[in-house]
Image: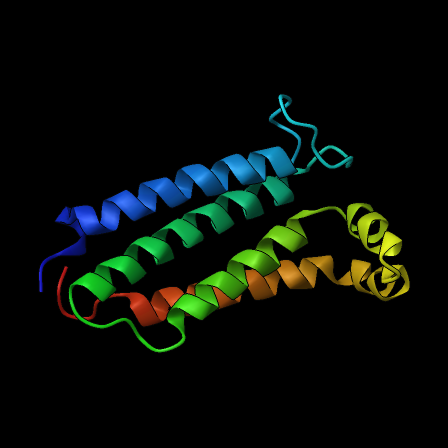
Length: 143
């Protein structure tokens, strides 16, 4: 088994995911003005650090998952955990007001209004899921 650090099967998915996730989170936080972004308050330092950690963990997990798939086997459920962590993180990165408005049109506003105080908890859960997936994907003996 080759080292993932030297492998293009790790770096290519890592860099593509980092670019796409970084662009999506930058748009979500209102830093890309070419496309209308969700109306939200100015992001604070905690939200910026969360977005950075989320993009790095998603990219690292994606690169390791594809590297492990190519050079052996990928642990069961790790790809699903990466997707779940990414979706939870993207939802939790939205401000609470932004969560209520689109879903209130669909009739889910009252449910989401109860969820808005728990956005920081969703952020923590997303990071825990991604760290757990990283722990599963990390090669034990080959660096």
